[in-house]
Length: 634
Image 1 (spheres, rainbow, N blue to C red):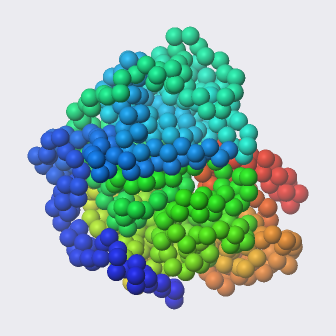
Image 2: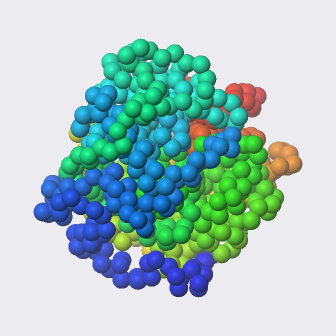
Image 3: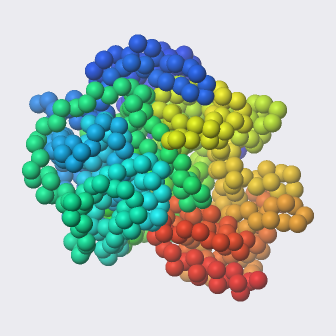
């Protein structure tokens, strides 16, 4: 039976949400979300809460609302404007702080810069930058003038940027000369040039960050600081319809043609504001830190729009978690007295591997809430996070959601729900899900597809220029009123949800469905294992079988005996079906700069297929190391 952890009494007593009736209220989704939308500043109230035309849904019809105004203008009052919006720390230790008034001024100025460059309402502006303050400034400036932004993760290749700009028909790019990663300046403008030189791009704005030598193309390339020096300090916000496009977020670009997920304005802001306040138990004096990259949906929703529309103070950090030492994150938490930490299971497992001694040197008592995002978190990592980072006193909000949902969908409300390590618990109020199989809804204990069964305000409004793909990919399997998430899940007897990862990561082993996350969790449960990644490989008899990559604790030597013990351990915890066909020990695993393990790369290595694009990896050298070890085993 899963361990149950109750919210601390003092936390529960002071929690922002203490009323369990919100779950009941959420069953009437139109009334529930209309009440939540009232927290925003609307220029014109909506005529209709929800229009249903499955699989197309619209929220707050004919309402007028500007995202930039909601994030900034509404806080430019005597009691609010001096609050710190962002504390930014660069990898080399530089610090910049922005009050809401200072951020407001910068956004207004850059809004005028964009207009002076010819950007008009409806034009899609591409942004290709690391986590520096100019990134959210650029996003909010786009929102202010009604120009949807398309942020491309800075770690992506020139080809990936080009593909996204070409699909979006974007004529404008905002980028940087270079930026820091582990003490070195990456030549980012060079990648930007490789992308736009083959496109019809009219203007490129360059932020000076790295100070490295770059080529500036006359009449196309402009320095950010030069344009800002001449810009007016106020820009009248555009009137934006609730359903107007706020941004494009391209996803799944590493495995095929990227798809542009479309998010609108009014419903999206309603969803991220409500979850920001309720899930993170947000209070006026919190110092909040989401460690994601703004280039992903987590960064959009819970580093930019969510925190600012909720008038909170956030940390932005440019660099790697282990530079100049594995203590960097803990130094930042101690330095700024961070109260809420939101990070990924991969990062947690990485810190587990490095050891708790890096935390023990720092005072982390300011923390009162922890969060997990990005992938299922195994119970062992959850408990390590709870005990060592949270000192057995911080509830953990394990959140499930995706680019397409825009907001957190399955998550605890930390002042209400008892927690089970490894479970994302229950759907957020106003959200309804089912576990389904070919014959319909499945009872507790059976694994199936996670399906969202009613619309929600921050849902995607389609795929850019791909309406048929939108209908087929998300609404084709279970009909136009049931959103197919592509994730597997199981519900326990308490109606708690356990996520199993992508359906592609749910193996069919001799007719048995097996989540790779389950096998990974079983491996990490073994005391000497710090990290594991499991992929499926073909098998003549069983169809598919698990293949595991395992990293061991410092000082532990790999051996055939240890491999045998790990296989038996997996069999004991899950069953013989889950026993890996083989295990490869590796000191590290290929990871993106945001800390996610690139399982696609590991799968292709194990099956001897083409590796594909690895430009997003923070440690590309490990690919060759693993390949050589696999060749020796063959």
